[in-house]
Amino acid sequence: MSGTDRLRFGTVGAGFWSGYQLAGWCELGDEAHCVAIADLDLGKAKALAHRFGVPSVYTDAAAMLRNEKLDFVDVVTDVGSHHALVRMVAEHRVDVICQKPMARSFEEAFEMVEFCRIAHTKFFVNENWRWQKPIRALKRSLGSGAIGFPIRARLDMLSGFPVFRNQPSLRLLDQFIVTDLGSHLLDVARFLFGEPDSLYCVTRRVHPDIRGEDVATITLRYTDGMVVLVELAYAGNVLERECFPQTLIFVEGERGSAEIGRDYELRITNSSGVAVTRHPPTEYAWADPDYKIVQSSIVDCQRDLVTGLRGGDAESSAADNLKTMTLVYAAYESALENKVVSV
Image (cartoon, rainbow, N blue to C red; front, top):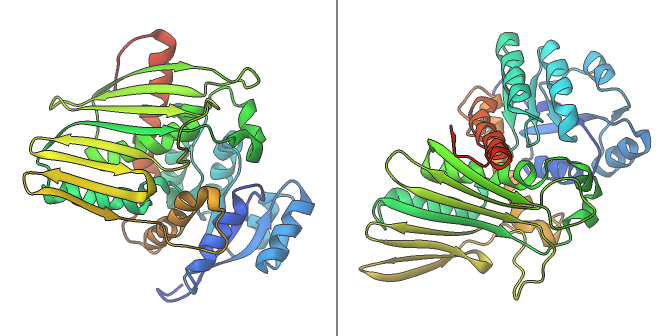
């Protein structure tokens, strides 16, 4: 395969998110194209293949790996299947991209990284949240020193959006909001501020008809004294102004503050005054208006993953995402035992 050849890939999973993943890949033009889709539900696989002009469908991912010549596999399935599927792909010496959360436990995630390391296959996690344009702009501002050294921050994703309507399977997760949403925001915290040395987490369940927690508050502490508060909620409560699925961020620095507010607005306040810029998502016809800030970021994330697949450096390697998984499962340990956990 030359550096200009299109990467051939297979998709495993034809559920809610798969159509958006494939639409994102289509935006990359000549970089990659899907040649096969596998799903246990043949009807779903055929419908998705017809929509995107994919020539082959399977009900068995193993058969797809045996029969197709693939450069990588994009795993877009529920978290319970990730461990087995990633191992299967690695055994076929094919590179793999996996949806978040990577695994049902830190131990599973670690094993997945080891499978791929031993097999000499590249392994990435499709962690797109950090690729949202307001978050990238905030990162650049922090790096410029506009507010001095950050000393405290708050990341909020609090919503009354009926998320279970589009993704009813989320009701069945024993661990919900910290794995589903916390994996994103904890990764953003790492992206913006680096690695914490301890955390404390409190969770609760508000919806009576779900298994897992739908509210979580996580405090990250850093060696230099910085504190980052991560607040998560899909409690179904009515907010004065719903901003799903935007992440609101406020950072205090030694010489000012930075804030991502509603409508993709970034405000930098320091001795020079207040600078306000907007960083809306790229508009794609295929994106659901309710999810556009998230779905738009898929394309930039995938562009970065192509760099990694071609031998360059990509941000969301599985080895890097393992550090996010450390925080996710440390948060559950903290909530269960009501203690500060060193990470």
